Length: 66
Image 1 (cartoon, rainbow, N blue to C red):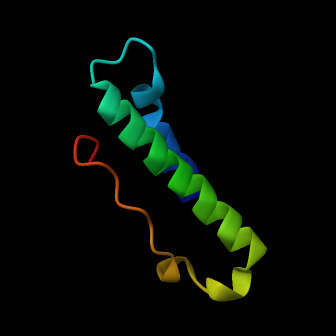
Image 2: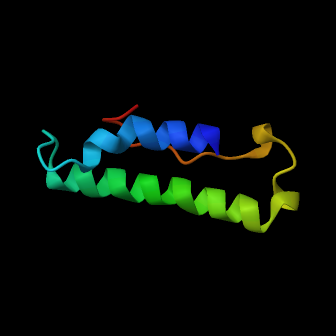
């Protein structure tokens, strides 16, 4: 969860109303953030599928974030 929270924190700025990115990029970032949350939910629901942190396949951030 710490890694997920860090990734979310790094993208918080994309959801602010005065951000300088396009509406399409805002949407793309929101989708990425949702994937991060969904991954955490999947890990909690089925921890046996994720025996180590290295086995987690993190979503790829949008190119304007990375």
